Length: 424
Image (cartoon, rainbow, N blue to C red; front, side):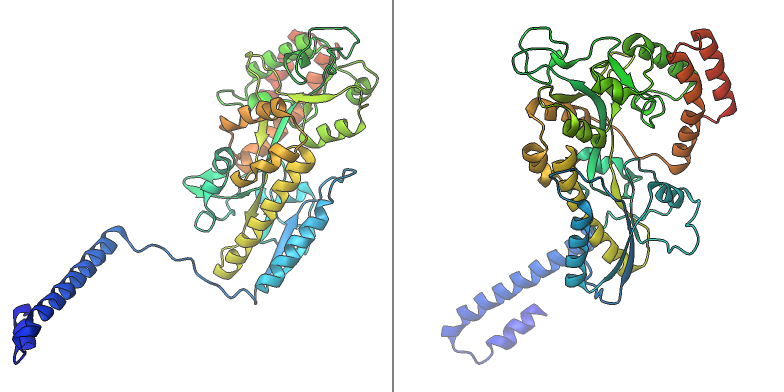
């Protein structure tokens, strides 16, 4: 057929033009061949997906967020939320109903307990600082690139290849310590070797740590670690270690800290740490270190709060994902500046490095635990089981730490608690 076309094209044509036609045909043949090759590759590799463009002006979103603590000299986060939503609505035409929900309401929603009364179920919800996985969470991986986030943040919300949350920041838990001043003077007034602030000299002395057994993180900091297990023997071993390392239980750890009876507090999250920094006398600097464990390891426990999408509809989901991305980025930056948390976005790490208020050693201590971390959001059912278990263990532990119970009676009580609770 090609030869026939060539003959028809050359019929009656002066010889001077024949080379030109031959060259044109060769170009035509090359173009056809290239087209066939591209078409074949497209059929083999599949057509790349093109993001859909939606007209979102008819969409109405219900958003549940959480009020954040106000600290003197720092931005009010509720004002930042309002700004982000106003800009989003102006640019997209979406209508947004914002509600600040209690953290217990969020847990009830995600655990299947339902929404109380006539309150409308949200399209987007902030997970809170202790997130859980719910069957209602939608995969946002088709619209949000996991590679934009720190590995620890993306992995925390990835299940079976699905990205189930839009990470905002890394929420760490550690031990707050009154560290020596620059001259090397310790918190007790003893002159020691001059060490960098927050270095090895900041480790608290035995029996000089105030601690809370009723904190939701008292057991989690140790038992949620990779390789650890929620069983009676682990709790007993941990209790013995705490009694030997931290000493007797203080009735009011904060008062003991303020009156100089203890040099360290555990467990401390970013909110409490910021409060300690704000209220502590300037002549006694405060730093944060990873908690010690019975195994001799020290690491920061962490979670990754995120914005979660609960709607399946194309228009609503597209709008929810876009707003969730904006809110997550805004909250991540606020948390880095105000609380000293690590923002989830890789490109926002500079905010943590420059504006968190931590020096290099402090930042590296936190980062060392996060960069190699394997933490993952638990299923809501598993989380509730551990909450029930820790509540039942609190009374026996307090009795032991306060000296009212022996180790033998503690062991009996703990084994009894585990016999009545399903292990997570």
